[in-house]
Length: 297
Length: 202
View (cartoon, one colour):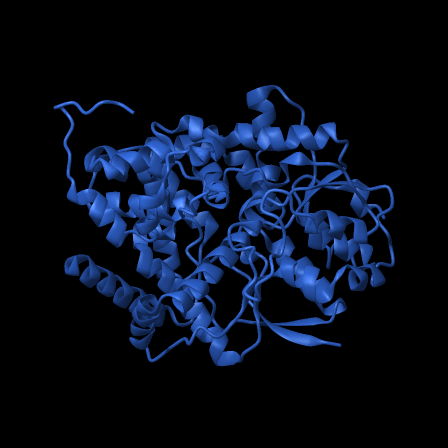
């Protein structure tokens, strides 16, 4: 059964996380999910928009996306990016709970004749995959099991916090010890190695602006993955993927280490396991640190 | 707790302002000073005060010390503190809004903070193009503290930039732009106007 959902790709989908976008657009149709992008979607403000823009103006960014999504139809909005998810879900929930905020945001939207009634559900792609699609359906599409591949599942922080509570009342996964990512690896036939730092922070945007403050956090993540014998680190988060991958040479220089651990998206693992094209669909050529254990299958 | 000294300035209306105007501020009254927040923070050791102490300083009315603190600029937005707080204080959001307040009130420390300079570049891209152009935001941020510093930062990150270009993950050419950029600007301007109106209503 195919269903269509409204998709919010987020700004990283056009640059640093192109490989997340490309691999998702390859695997989701295989799993019966068709995507319709939010018409003319804009930036969500990520984790810094409020600083320069202020609280309400930052929330207005998400309000425009939600208004455009609602105008397209009542389908759930799904997004693969931790920051897009946090902001969009937060604004959606806040305006439902707070009539004053709803009035303010609708007044702002009203400046261009738009409005939003708060009726959409905003969800993370991983939550949709884990709850709607389900592990059995994922397993059923695996034609090339990733046998012998050791994967450290690095969830990152924002994806499961604090809005991992779904709007339907149940909790998608645990804040400190989520299991969905390891389950995805196992469904693909890989081995999920024990990995305690699965929700440790990579430094987020602080790593981008002031890496000296946070490189040690990434080093600890890499250290544990290496000690666990991981061939690759898998992550759902665009910024985690970029930070943990691109800073490895700088970490090696600073700490005298020799890390060269591939960091891939769960969707790239699925694309390979589903037997899709490793370059065109899994976008493995877009990883800075190549993953021969994955590409050579 | 440090004892009050005559050299410190206190503004007892500050606590009330934070309770009433900062998102989640009302819950600050419930903070029981357990320190789960500061202890959970990945870079709490690099903060001058940490959230626990900062919250007590808010209650004490230490406005200037709060808004010139580096604690509000070092939040990595991981929400570890939020999910662990036994009193459900939305710590991350409070720190976010305090940093916005520090900018609004024109504190020199706020303007100098890396996060503030980065946010300025980020907001520029988000509102001028409607999208984040990672390349331009980074470049604008690098050069926001002067030409020399910009060149130094650029050089230090040259290998990373090259790797991103090589893997086609740095967008080259004209920035991606939303079609309704005028519309977006009007919505944001209206929201800023409403925000200012609420500020005056006190």
